[in-house]
Amino acid sequence: MPVYNTKDKYLVEAIESILNQTLKDIELIIVDDNSDAKTKNVIRSFLMDSRVKVIENDENLGVAASLNKGLGQVSGKYIARMDSDDVAFPNRLEKQYNYMEAHKDCVAIGSNMCLIDSQGQYIRYAKNYCEVNELKTAMFFGCSFFHPTMFLRRDIVLKEGYKYNCDYTTEDYELWNRIIYKYEMRNINEVLLKYRIHGNNVSTLKRELMDKSTARVQMERFKYYGVDISLNHDLICSCENIIELRRIESALKELIKKYEWIDKNVIKERVLMMYKNSSLKQLKLFGRYLRYFIVFRNNLI
Image 1 (cartoon, rainbow, N blue to C red):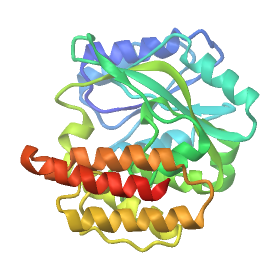
Image 2: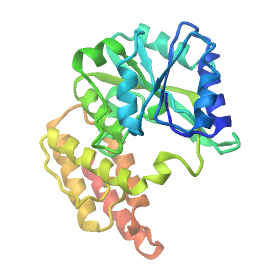
Image 3: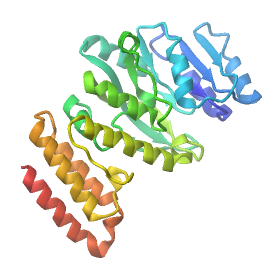
Image 4: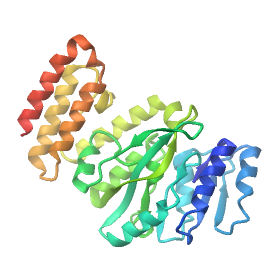
């Protein structure tokens, strides 16, 4: 759990939600990224629990570097991610542990989550694809795993030397992209975490940087599978003109011809979402672009 000047109430709830898990044989590694005295005091108040271990950075290193320091200190069989402003369901770790024990072919899993506001009130559920081929296909469009829900095999992480790349703002998407090239990853179709939405979320404060970082990973993923595509740094899921949308469609069709594991249903769902989310969505024009999508969809069948 990386921590940097998290609001007291959020931090206490996050830490307690881990220490009160039904799975008791755990260690909680908190990486304090040079927080203020107030946050440090909250963290230190939990040191009475022998399962809590604190790493204090002498300077603010950022999330990716802090996570890498935490990875270097893990001693358990599995590694679970957690953010300092979220709340894990009491059975989260036990559910993920049991799943991994029963599915030896799987290297990492995430779960669905429930979005809450700053007061802890329900907003909506957030759901991802679950099966291997669905996830591998969806990763062409963006990250298909919720970072604070992730649960990984430590031996694979150490053996392969997997670490977060500090050159990417979307460090989780970049890391999962590398792992899923080689290993199976899945999501459990259950809600195991409350994800808090507030004005200080990293995803809110660094949106433009994250968009560019996401686009970079997306283009790298296409290239890995033999399709060199350039989108002028626009996100694949929110392109701004019909020419780029058609270029993406062409790249996807090329992938479908090459790889049997590509899930056509996922492609259809995500391409339609791409049209809906784009700036092409003006009411007077959208019918025309929807017809483009229908042609694309029918060509897949």
